[in-house]
View 1: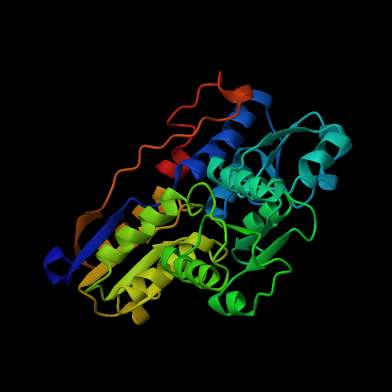
View 2: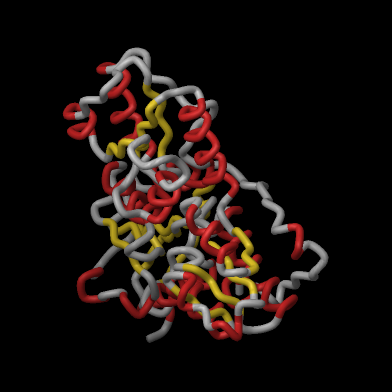
Length: 333
């Protein structure tokens, strides 16, 4: 098929998209640990919610485990990395009891939520955590405090049904990857029911989640299809799909790789929105664009709201190790 025969397509490519500073830092920690200590480097749970990233690190020598007791005795001198989502306090305590050397890759913004929750607790407040049950970040945040001192609220309905022992002594925090609009609704309902509810010292939803949702809102109106690159277990990626639909996209889907695209279902479109969740690598965004270029006379236009310049330092033990573009080419291209 020659270029002239291809139907025209405008691709609205969102910026910012893809890796946030916390995800970038977590991946860098594993890569640098492999360079510094050699393989294997163990990682408890997925370092970030993306199979492509996990498989790329496995190819470099990372070994992913669910729990620390899976690390064989002969490898206990090798580092184990905790994921960007954060872990309960019991996990580093378990590592110490096993004489394991660990590197904590918890996103600094997740750590900030941990500190906010602990501050509420220290001031004698019962902590209300707005988030999704079972998400690793929620498990990690709840695991910072004694059992029974945190209540999880997921929806406005949960907020309506919530019956705390002391309604005048509450403090809330939120998961960092929630829908900004949905969370605002839950907080408003809680504040309506509990006027003395204490807010965290700073907004819990991270800048990257907010930025990615805002640019998708801007780009979505008029899109025949909006593709979000991300994993089905990625909270922030799934929220972007919802945001695109609410903002006016006729259809929105979550895709992990170009091979998942159903071209018969996509059909005839003239405007495509494209973004990526905070744990999705840029190489897959490029892969999706090339797949559309093979079938359409595609023109890419950038829909950008802000430029992100945040950079989080890796662990002190790794800062003397050089990180090159080649080291990160498997995700950045």
